[in-house]
Image (cartoon, rainbow, N blue to C red; front, side):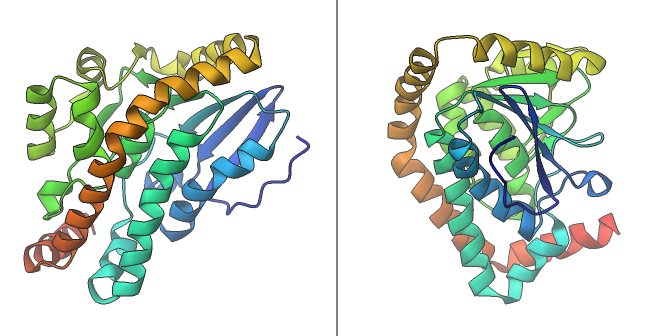
Length: 260
């Protein structure tokens, strides 16, 4: 791998020929997103773009989860630290924008639960392969927050809105097969075959003519980028308001205490 990646241990990049395997790497915490990982998810995409030998990215999670969403200890600090809270929102918007602009194909290998921001990152990938044991969920509303980091903005672009609204408003889990039916995932795989299938598909894409492949992705993503421009801004603004609410504080502290 010719490019040197400047990333924390929470996000790793491994080279396999033209493939780059990007792994969310906090397995003991079910890959919950803490401050270093949040920063890495915002900044890895430009580093991957600079890697001229990379052709395709496979994004997956270490251990038994893809990502359990925000780390509760980190998120709880926002209750009394408005600077950190606002920085997390700015960085969250950067994650979405960078993923949409990233020129190479990205295959999500969803090996386990993909929740909250983890769900948003997975669904924004170009192809979403999901283990039959995995599920998606966006439980923002359940902790008193607007689903501002992507779900409320782009799920309705990918799914029948009457179906996606129910899951956004309840925070219920979406089993793998249902995620495929709704259009939030491409296809299910046997758990033990997930990474092999992702690598095989990555190899096929890497063998395609580069200019045609990247141009096709760019044009396809223009639809999402244009449709999301206003909705993402509105979503993060609305999430910021609910982050300051007494209801959010009460529910978040109760959830963290229950997890302990």
